[in-house]
Image 1 (cartoon, rainbow, N blue to C red):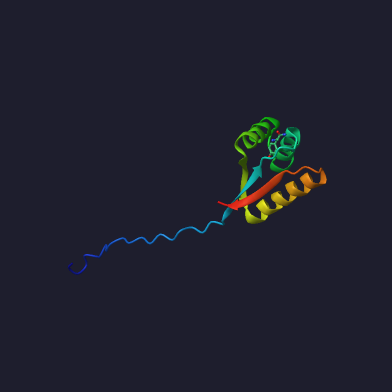
Image 2: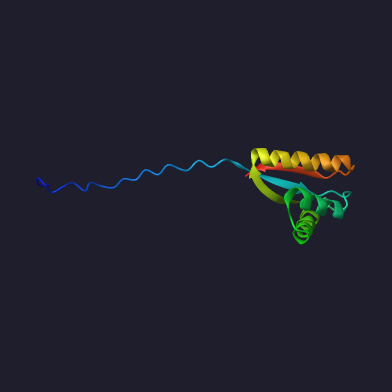
Length: 102
Ligand code: TYC
């Protein structure tokens, strides 16, 4: 390296991982008593699904035992679970809804 040559040096890039908020899966569980139409209604009402989409997810839960119905921030996920559980309880259905960290 002579004078006036300049020093391009070596590019060393330190990548800091972008902080993303932890996300939570909201899951619906199957049971033997909650009517299918009620579950479809819940998915339309609280998760903004179309009737066709809601019916499809309801059938998945019915056949597989559970399904993820949405992924949200903790606050939203918690609210969805509370809304579904309260709605089911008020209609005396044993429908269960839970959240799990992604
Ligand atoms: N298994 C219920 C029935 O046969 C229907 C059902 C679907 C219940 C999904 C809960 O999350 C559920 N009536």
